[in-house]
Length: 445
Image: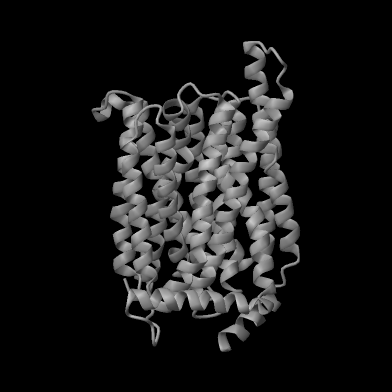
């Protein structure tokens, strides 16, 4: 394997590594365990709000850090060092979930939020390495390859974790609860182990004059981020795209983080929801590759619009579904577009940013994505609580409480539709050729 191919595979292996956290922890077991173990006995809409606000707080912290971290890394040529720091912070926090006891929902949220900070912080620097390993002709495909590897790797470990919960005695475990706790340990090991390939195989271009001392890198980074804000008049296309991305990726991230919680709130069994998540992973693997080729051969903008349209249909159907078979169908549809819209958004953005400043600009990219992830889960939580209060009679029966709780949950998921709609409208006004010209101007200035 030559150096170029090794760099590509080393880069893609980080998606293989960290997707275990996104799948087993964020999308799968944490929402279920949070509702059934850490928030035991709490009303379903209240626990949804707690989970949504926890996601939002973690995303806010990452969003505030991302652009400054990216600027620091660009000035000090330290992208890999920062990736390693945040990745292993996430690894440590994931392992610590094993230690959180029953009913300790506040501790669970804190450790989980720190894990998200590690996961999301590392992604700033992982994304910024894409231009290092990909050329302009294959960036869409390589971006798609990363997501495809993530779906496959995350899906394989998730499959093992699901089998652990379904057949704990086969793995020497007492029950499903213990299996979930050990699943968190398995994610930490998987994430930490496969990140080593990225550390060893992905090169990092050393910039002339880069600061060798950490303190100088930090001060240089702050100066660079201030300089970027001063260039704002030249960045209209970038920021218009980021605003569009902010809205539509909010819908995507909210569905990733809250789908299982929503399914449980409307009465579906946790095992059915876990199977649906597995479907997403294994459908997502080939679909991310196909979308990468679609962007390369057809048109990136049209492919992104196709994905947004499918997501809007998914949300509308999701508000009305009543049987688990519908959840499986929606899982297949999500798998078809989830990796594609993420991969093509990342590669499309790479066309608009100045050369040599990828970590800084991907810091902004991740900042907007994480600010969006603040809005979505919190929006679901607030809408669900408001709907519950408006619909609940003064002296409800037990049956009315359950029915109104499910109806409020349907209102909460419906609120996500507007995020996709606003994102699609804003994306329509993004002029790619103008963006490329702005990037070329900034690269030369």
